[in-house]
Length: 58
Length: 237
Image 1 (spheres, each protein chain N blue to C red):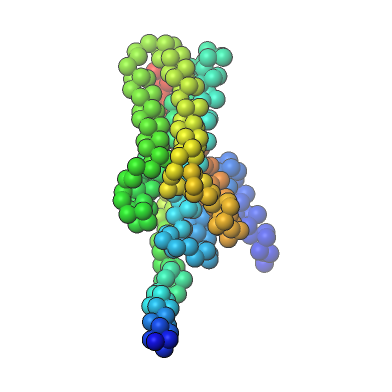
Image 2: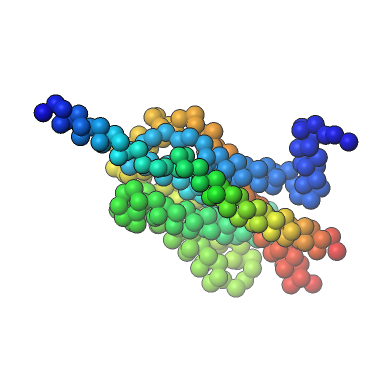
């Protein structure tokens, strides 16, 4: 009986080791995508900011 | 010529500094840190939440940013009544508009998170309902604004409404949910993040994320305020 319980427990531990964010290393793909996404927004904001500054001066 | 690493960063900073204010650069840096660190840095292994705890870095700063923007909106509304200057009315409206944008994003991201942890897009959680009522209150602010034609009258009436809305919003979102049971941390029988699981690993990314997104919110408001000023000037000439 104890052996069976041990087996179930071991299997439970094993199945809980599913691939998560850190293990596969592919999270860096998401990091790269989100960084470029925000970089684009940043460039847009800076350009708009400078354009407005130019209009304000004139 | 060979540059030291620190010199490189100083050069890069001064390059951007020649284009935009320092606090805008700080906002960009903080959000980049929050995106990269928020996805890759280790998080505590919590039941149910698991990896979705990383939403703390993206969903929660929206609400913090919204509250700060609404505060700025209210301060400008007070200035409208004090100084009788219409430029404060323009500022007040722009801050409220950006705050609503953040609020809508906060609601939508929260709904996705709720579906995957609590099991439904919308629960009868007091914090959710309070946030919805608060958003509707500010929706009424915009309706009120558009219903008055006279500029002076519009500025004064909406400033009074704005000043009363903010404390009510704070009570709805931060006080009332704490008096009953809520699924949100820090409410009712639920301990806040501080007490057990907002550990140093989460804080390291969470605080910069709040600062970064709030600064981006203020930047967005700054852009719309300046646009509205130009429009205002053009109409008066």
